[in-house]
Image 1 (cartoon, one colour):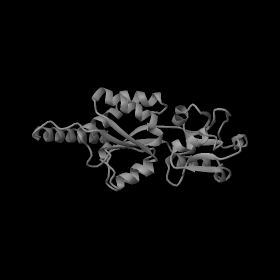
Image 2 (cartoon, rainbow, N blue to C red; image 1 turned 135 degrees about the vertical axis):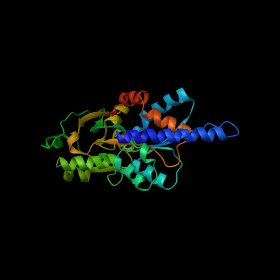
Image 3 (cartoon, rainbow, N blue to C red; image 1 turned 120 degrees about the vertical axis):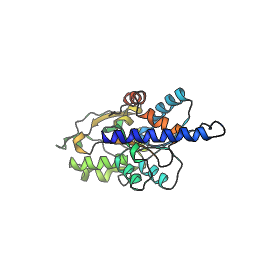
Length: 261
């Protein structure tokens, strides 16, 4: 309740300031595009959300997708964006600790599931669990995921594999990609026998098949926070941020396989 009240107060203050600025301007302010930095796993859903927002508002949305770590470091270096969507709380924490986001606007946008995928031409179904029987069913070859050193999906994967006592066996086979979509591409091309990605990535590709779900208890909840970046809350950015938290965007996220709060 307190957090929601803080957000409302922040939005009211920001909107009031925008009105004052516009009223004082000698001519109508030129409409600006909104630049959004977002985790690679949000690509398909956010492209659809951006198109919907542009259609209704006339404001163009420029989307830049990469690993959350890469984007956070770019923001730290001064990259010009107004909105950030991370694939985990840790990289949003990174920016918050450096006073680079508007703290009152930080909200959980969506959730996701961790899954194992294989090539669609070699489908496989297994129950991933602590009994390790599923490991004997895995095809030989590399297992692709995001680099655990900095990519959220890789961190979730390592946590799950360790919890399931499978890390020692899987680690030597790991193909470490610089973001989750590139890990998916390795499976699509047959360069990896399987991949540990998000369920939304599996749904976005016609070249992979879902092999199994990792138990949600095997890793911390997969949470995607959104926030406005410090000093970047122009009218258009506020509009898009508000749209992302609204019913129309939530329907788009659900359609693409995300869980919404």
